[in-house]
Length: 248
Image (cartoon, rainbow, N blue to C red; front, side, top):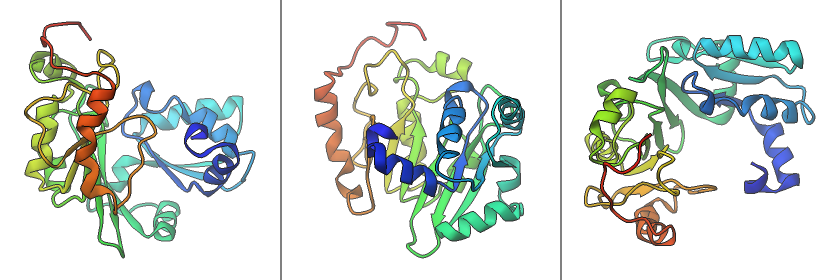
């Protein structure tokens, strides 16, 4: 956040932050929370609403024994379709003018979720898969997304690794976007075997883009997102290679 916004703006962003959503309990998805909470407590005393898997409550409770910071925890299971979200979360979402629906997905730990956000006035819809194998429930929930962000941990050809670790191939993520009729599909969560982005191959469509560090976009720039892929691939000199190379 400091790199993205700069020091002064960063503090204002922290003060304005209302909700954090966490997909699952694996450490790479929540280990930055303590430092974020600590920094935020210096600029506001308003509790931060954290939506996450139920195991995350224990992590936050342990951290609070070391350093107290005000938070309100909401289990993702309380935000699935048909559930009544707690008042604290409902109020924050109302302030933001959005709805939030968590979607159970298929990963290697219990209580893994994707999420769907919808703007109540502007008509946009953003869906994020979290870490998962291709998931029918997520496809249905993400139907008609303006932007669908999907994990693409492994390149095509590494299906057995993807099955074993319950992640998705790039082509599978692109297919989820197609089936959900998403306007733009953004691939993310790439294996560390790749320099910054996945191998770009023939499965990429005219609606596919890739995420990269400090990436920013808005509704006005969505149309041009796929045009960035060749330039980013060229910058990182990403080329197709033997899928058998390297091990996760």
